[in-house]
Length: 221
Image 1 (cartoon, rainbow, N blue to C red):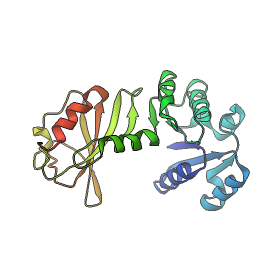
Image 2: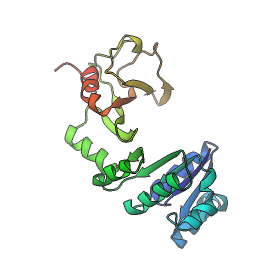
Image 3: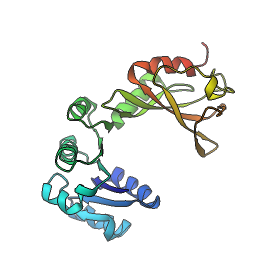
Image 4: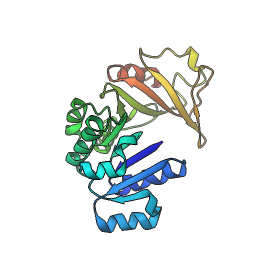
């Protein structure tokens, strides 16, 4: 895939490293000349372009018209919004993702059709509010205009789903287990998967079913 990352801060840099290591074609757009040079020294000139990702000329030069994914991860929500809007409306990029620094802006992104946003502030707030422990749901992203959450949960030994095959677990409507981590190794979930205590489980759940999923995973009180 060809992925364009707008914003060469810590988030953009670390994301680029992972994507490059996975063999993808990656380009970071960074408008700060000094940071652009640091990125070029770190990643290589072919992975970095100096320019303002909000400008159409820069986007054209970067190849937005052939990008499979555009990710806006600058520290300014206004810039991320412009990047995403142009990527969708002008270049018809199929998948556009945005970092949202102020959770209050998430609804604006959804209104213009940016289906996938990540708010670090929102995630941290959820951790504090929920006092995260075993079997709690931690939101890590949003899909489909924010109507579906990507959540993770570390299963305690008392979770009702431990020791049971996924096909035997009654999940809320529209909810799916998709991935799990065990002893540092990850695998996709299928009907024969049997969860163990300590597994980190990743699920897709409609917003209005998150409470029901929490009840499925939570240890009896």
